[in-house]
Length: 324
View 1 (cartoon, rainbow, N blue to C red):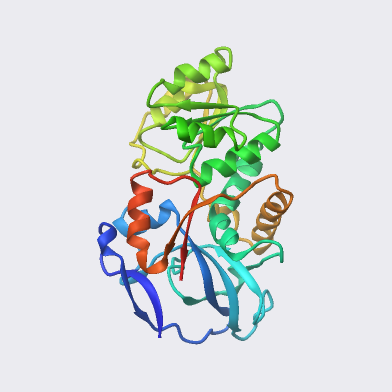
View 2: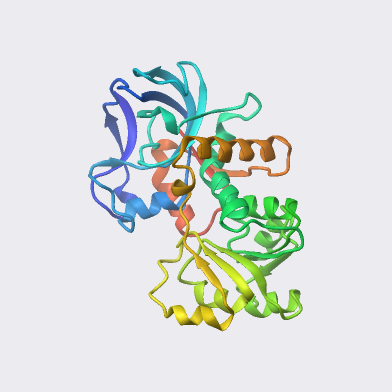
């Protein structure tokens, strides 16, 4: 038997149960992966509390991890037994010592990227790649606003956007987090608890507003983000940490000929070649030191509830990794 963290019904962190599960052998097209590190992401909270309902219960949570392939089923060509691999993909199941999953969702890890770094960066890093390189291809000189700039996702976005030549603005909740964002490529860290970020963005941009805003916060920032956009600006709403955005009148976008997008990583990595290219570009910027993956919190897998509480309370910076 293998230990895993499951929920039997949606709820708070107390719904997470560390218990025995049966992993089994990989079937055709599958691989069994022994995890060495598991990534924590806000989508795990959405799955736990029922905001994103799971197909069946009980269910193991978790969307990303790194480890070693123990065995493969018939017809698997992408990986082999003994390969170091990582992934960020549905369905959930990463909060486990081991799991069986589709082999074509795994990517081999370069020798110079360790397992904990890989587990901390696959979902956030591949999300950053598609947001910055495909959803809105950031060009040198563009003005970019990144919400939650000191979080695990925000730090990656700030560094990568700065490398692409953007003027990077970010919202944070404290001076400590402002300093953290500033050390990772954020040119102007706006402490929103002390200053209206719309006003700050307009001042920084000479009244123009941000050409693109990356918003993983949702309800709490959506209206003001529309205000902070430049004419013909692009609002990329990729998450809802503060709750889903309520229905709104699309005509509001016409005030600035603005565009609004609600993209999802897994639609950008559904094809094997796109998955490999997304991971390859992420590995490249990490290996070159352009993007540094900051792991600021680690917990034992059995303490996943404590990790969830910290993330929901916004007491974290950087990434959190669970150790099986």
